[in-house]
Image (tube, rainbow, N blue to C red; front, side, top):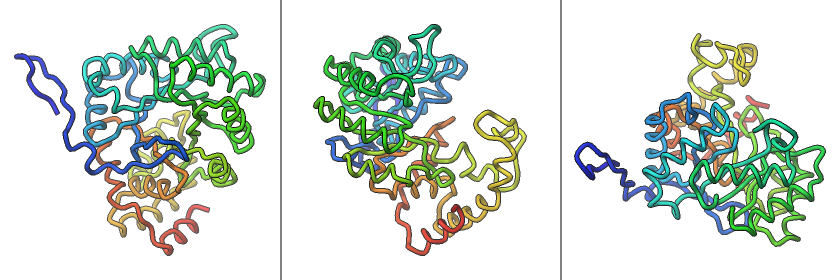
Length: 337
């Protein structure tokens, strides 16, 4: 929503009804409620992108009741630019609403040259968050994640850094991402002993990537953690984009590092069969794929990306039909197993 504050200057005022239709889910046993859909800034928010389009997406997200904005130090391209652009947009549009937003960032992947710009050392995590806060113009983030397990740094060091970050007031909650069941259990035990609020494991989860069902969801139950799922549409396979083949301008058509033609061709019959079920439910395939993840009690939110505000609005319609019949779940399982 925009108003004319001064001639030629458009000031953003959030939709007053933004909380009326959004679904909110609790993150594990914490006090945090997350919007069932969260907006991820992995793509479409870097210096190579149109910042006005990025601004429109974020305004639309908040107007729809999406309160969780998810970033990482290396999002762009170039790395860091998504946080910088977000900081610019935040200062102009969202500063008034800071206490209504749940803002996340992460560190764990390669960010700068030398031995201290990667993985999970105390040096890297604290330095990275300090840089992220400066780029975004924030005093703190609501949650700070370790982005991936580090096979060489002791987990005690990584969790100790997260604990100190929370104690310093630079983050309200600690989180992890891409951790399996065993390391999740260990991290939860360590942070509980340190009396640090630890609430989320952010993981890849979709109909075509169900690894979290092999023990991790049970571990989250046992530890009182929530799950936030990324890549719910399997890099676009679980949309109507590939129903009739591979478009030349698509990720698979360009054989991107995230999706290639062979992967789509291997799954095309599954995609078409799933779409048939979605149509019967009165949904698009993408909407059903999001709803299918949200049916899991451990899932607090699903992270979606968007290249336009209209695409985001389309994804939010998944919340109009979240229930599945037992028959639908059986048929879906037979298709994707």
